[in-house]
Image (cartoon, rainbow, N blue to C red; front, side):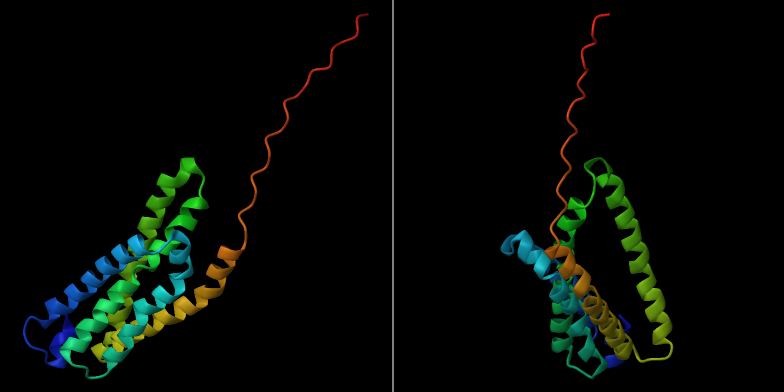
Length: 177
């Protein structure tokens, strides 16, 4: 991780920072799945998404390695926002198309996750690595704030009632001629 090298942290700190990020994801997902109700997870999507980005902002400053590790742990825990968007996604899908929809979602997520390092690598050509991480955090925060209204609206709009099945057609008896 170039951040650790640029900051002059001791050898092995890069592994610690990456491990803290992954450990935060694990802790956030376990805590979110075990301690929160599905409705609470949905309400916390935006705050958790913001938590995914906000801890990256101080990395633009010269922070001690221990604080950087804590910030990476918090960033990883914010990834639990995904738990709150899964149920509404499943509920919006027809049962027979869920497998295809999740495949498409997975492909889209991997594609977008791959473009992040590409774009941020370009930013890092002009901005120091700590500043680049802060840019990533700021972009995540902006996206969370932009998604706040649509996600809140989606939670408050009741799902459409299924239409009742049509009544069976009745056949009128013919009159004898």
